[in-house]
Image (cartoon, rainbow, N blue to C red):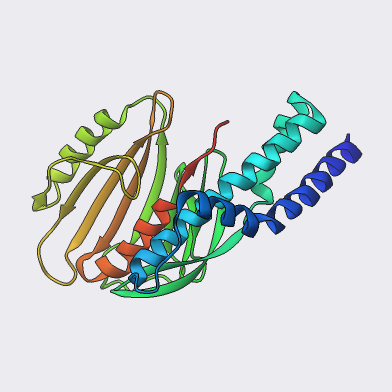
Length: 251
């Protein structure tokens, strides 16, 4: 059994490398089909956004190619087992460009492969840990005590819909924050609901943003972002861009 599993991993690795080597050609074909050639005078922020779209399309092509290979060569059951291994080999790290505090910033982000989702984080600045049954992303170097909390927790609630949780978090924040915004329906950085609140207008005024999305079944994923007013364009923006990379992994 061990030899068989090793052969599966080696075969997947070799074919994945082949597909990755062809991704430039794959993108060129997609680009010509969609007419997405960039103009010289396009703004940097739009360039960064288009680069993200390009990376996602390339990722889809790679996954599709590996899936076809697995199912056609090794059969349905074994093929599915190989597809489940793709995340171990596909882009464990990559470079992206985001706008931070009004300027483009290149970041090297690392794949975090959890049992029910994947997300990329900037391990130079942050770390992902598990506390009390949920994952939380916090600064790699702890902030001084004079700063409010900076974190983004990720929690799956299997028995409550996004609508239910949005109403629940809205009531919860009313107990501790001066200003609570109406529940919003959002499509960016994720598709779902946003509950947001701020406590004051000083540099260290706490901000709490809660994004809630469907888990594709009967439950939800909750992303609880905490930072402060002065850090909105720093930590707040980085958390936002991390969420753009979030993907649910089916069991």
